[in-house]
Length: 209
Image (cartoon, rainbow, N blue to C red; front, side):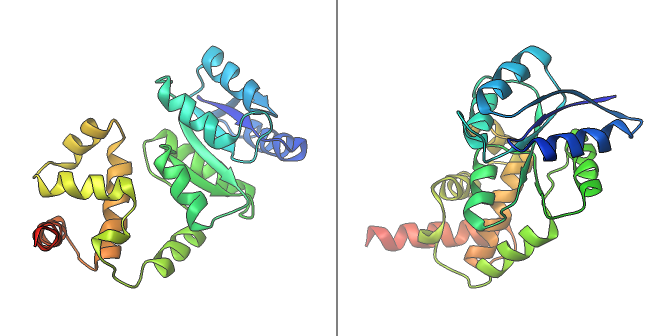
């Protein structure tokens, strides 16, 4: 059984998801919470396999909950459930080590499918979010357009580190490294790590002139 904890400040969302999940044969709800403080206490005590987490939570935001879950080394996979899929929201979730991102506007059964996928170790993002990210990153830009974490990943790529080594160095998952690399390639207008490293060294040389 996949043990799931649900966190959302809307009782209707919680009850709807709980009812849907209870009809599934391989997933069980071990608890629910309506604010961030309850989330952290419950995840520490219950040790669920997957936390379905709304970012808009009272007392402690969902994003901060996610950051604390990772900082404390709690083993739960975290599926962010949000009504928003703008770039900042998605990027913040990835930077905080979310394992997936589901939209409240999608059919509820899609959220159940995402729970199974993140439990199996897949990095899950909805098509709507992927389209938005592609639209924002179609125009190649210089390395200066990279976020701080993306620049850090690119520097390690240029040093010849593998995805596994980068993940260990930055204390993140390999899926997160892959996500950052996809963004780096799109921003730089390249298709592989060799080309990306070439731009890194070229710009570093230009910066020394």
